[in-house]
Image (cartoon, rainbow, N blue to C red):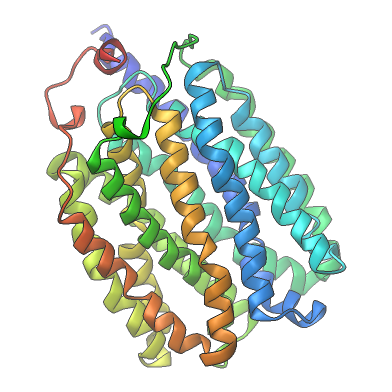
Length: 403
């Protein structure tokens, strides 16, 4: 039987999402070099935990401040090239992390990597849901899993590389980085939807729906917790007597668990609603974070895996929920929730590091572990937008036409 128009849209959407997933893996994988190498950088450059937190903050804040503006731009103009330039900048910056001779050089590396991430995320997120396909929660979760998998694979890969070849040889990782960039960028050209310059009026704050404000603050709380744990996870492992490689493994387990469960969470949200899935996952996250911090050391990887499952899996669901709050402005909304909200959460890294220097990192992270529970309480005020994925299929043009 001939392929219907809706089937054709979904087929192209899945191909495009798969390629963008690879780009997400590349960008976030190289951006993840910082956390597993942090204990080595602290030792080599004599950094305090406060300065280490500041470095993570710089990359995240640079990313967050640029994303909403770039997201608004990609809503107005053709933007496919941004999904290539972004990862290229991230790779070019992060490969030199092992050659940094001091805090200022690391600062520049984090800044450039933040720009690369800011270029990639809103453009890619808008492309994933372009054409208003069904199963948007599933598609976004699949795309998001690429970034989480990149963050999961990179810690083991870069720590193993450094242990074998030394910290000074990280620039050699440029070669596989460029190879992966070409592998996703070249075939992506054939899956891009037709783009037209959109006439988008300036949006005032009063035009922002209250449900999006609630969702934004929920993501701020969630991202503060997940960013803090992913940044200081290697330090927490070594604090409890583990090795740098053990810290890299823990980061990989944490992020990999979130990536796998994120796909299921996206599917569940298409069926049962965004609010129910986000709330349930966040409620279950806090106990696993606390078990990781205070539970028996023999089960520490199982506990951090559980924390990843429930602490990270709701993130792509939140992005799709935000896009549904403002149809037709997917770039701007993606920039607000994937950039600005995460950036505000990233700002907390510096005070968290400062407090950890004074009161102990275990004690401070125990407080951070309650943030998902607070976010779940906030989600009780949220009301779902009727999702096209939970309705009967359309011709794939409904949102753009109504916008």
